[in-house]
Image (cartoon, rainbow, N blue to C red):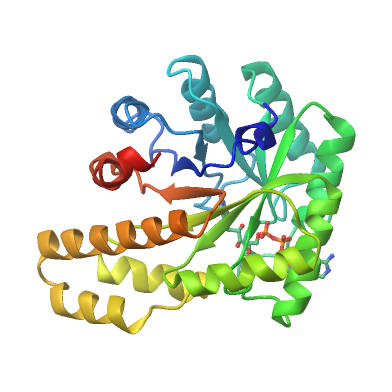
Length: 288
Ligand code: FAD
């Protein structure tokens, strides 16, 4: 599906992200329950992460995207990373996606694994995008973007110019890394406009549920924690319920501000916790 059509109507779209259950056998039931609950939220699409545990040629993303599409009737986006895959690995996943009728891909470089040299076939997401576009012209490709700059980039400007390469290679839609200060996103969006990046950009929102896990995540992805959120994390770190309430309110605040500032879309990192996505969607139901 050409996702740009989704964004033609000038109103924000709301999408969700899930990850495959840890064990293929033990987690299948849970993912069905998660998807059944997320379906009620009528998301524009659901994306599913790839090999976040570092697996090569992982087929669980394809399986879950097939379930999202064929059992729940929702548009899926399959994440696909390239730097730790060979061209043959990528070909195998593309063939499986085609067989499952899944034609939307979030094409990513993936993270470099410490102590393990990357494979030689693809260095950057833009190379994967070019490859898919030439092999499978019918696929619609999205790309990742970084409101606070990708941690490996030498500068903000270099990162934006690399993002432009990714769009020129064929990414028709961008999904952002999580951020907690909307001003970072607006500044990034302005820079994209100046650089001639004109595709829809969805804002990545992560509702925080634990201080330790968010600290681990931001240390990897380079997102910053504003003082207000840091105070909430410190104050409620030992009170799960209060922390959840406070951080859901924080996420809703971010989403409403994004709506007020004409965001193209909001991509909610659900962390496979539908009750949190439900609370956020309930707060903005009349604005969708
Ligand atoms: P690229 O676009 O290739 O950029 C990586 C770095 O290289 C940047 O610093 C960029 O500035 C630079 N660069 C790009 N092109 C060039 C060039 N031509 N010359 C020089 N420098 C260049 N990871 C997973 O493992 N699985 C997932 O499912 C997953 N899902 C994600 C979803 C979203 C929305 C986001 C934002 C990230 C996700 N990630 C996932 C993490 C992602 O793989 C990492 O952030 C990775 O480090 C970069 O991927 P990329 O596709 O943005 O890389």
